[in-house]
Image: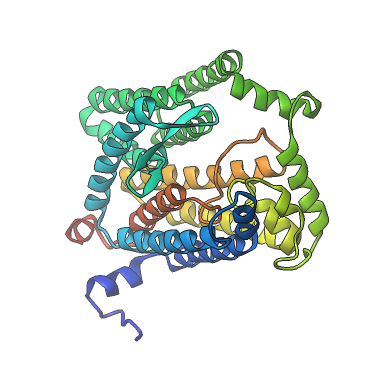
Length: 375
């Protein structure tokens, strides 16, 4: 049933104020995620000896349905409730991330996951969008409370990156730091301080190279492929070449059977082989559209919290997509980071949906600040 502009129900107000173009683009990514899991996951399930070759498909259907529900539910929330949700989520995710250092599951030399009854979660995934909104709130409040608000957000930032460095999760650390720096730039903080943060980041990367063998090995393999194992990247590049412009057809890809992470970190290569460069460009275009549309949506916005929050969430969303696609194409060193809504993973897809829902909520059209607070 069509919703009238005169409909004053929660659903009616939501439908006529939410950015329906961005919502449609996000839902299209969810659709791509389902199609790509149909293509990539059965082979992975067979290779690892899973009880059913459709096990990953069944799980991801549940994850994608839950993610859609989370995204839409949060997008209905008023700004005040989004801010409170982000604060509670940031505190809870930070405490759980700190818990991984002692009771977390170690995989490939890193402790990033917690085993809970019936599931395994990566709490740092949820910390990313929540911190972006909390940082926006504290930076916006800096105009009223001065150095105390800035000191609070600075201390929280240092605590988060210190915890991520301990796991270690350098990719997540760089995303969180990049988002925070983007927000500092937008809020208009002294450019010398921003440059100082950049210098600290470069020095931190140099320090990580000499103190973290895993980080050093990945960078060395990127700069000199002959120096180590580059199997997954090599196969991924062959998949793109095999797919060509239009791909070999759904289900016809053969190189995906050789990729251990075909359903997760390298799902973009499966898209390249089976659907071709045209679909890869379409996926890239959808991500670019969401980011640009979100930034254009902020033009004319006067609420600094909304500007900073949406900027942080858009930066995070776009950067995560870029890192995944660029590492698959061997444009940057490989990093175990999922492609939003498309890669397999429960924690990742729900956390991305959390951030997308917050973005939709923050960028809804509002007549006035009074109307915004009354929602």
